[in-house]
Length: 159
Image (tube, rainbow, N blue to C red; front, side):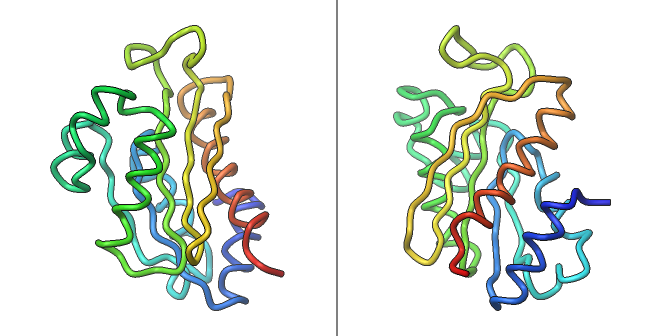
């Protein structure tokens, strides 16, 4: 069952007649899956692309390889680019990309530790970014990240 904030977000999107699409890396499809479990999913969720590996960010979304090499696959810059490019694939009112580090072995540094999550949203032309650091197990980080996306949407959609 989705968290309360996911259900609230889905209800708010449905009430406003808005749709959402996701480009997922760190959450590997779980973000779309959580929204799909809401009763309004048929009118809210357009779909998502899972680009967990950097090669898919390049090959499917066409994120420039040089950008990934410069900033890493888990970065604010790449996340923004993913959200920007998602708009060409899935028609929706809101396009969101999420990347980050849920386990060791990626591009983590002292400034970007495991638990760092990047979200970028385009909401009817408005661009919004978030960077958070979550603690816990891999699944806890993923679930906290998904709730963060729902909060971002709720904070940004007009009342």
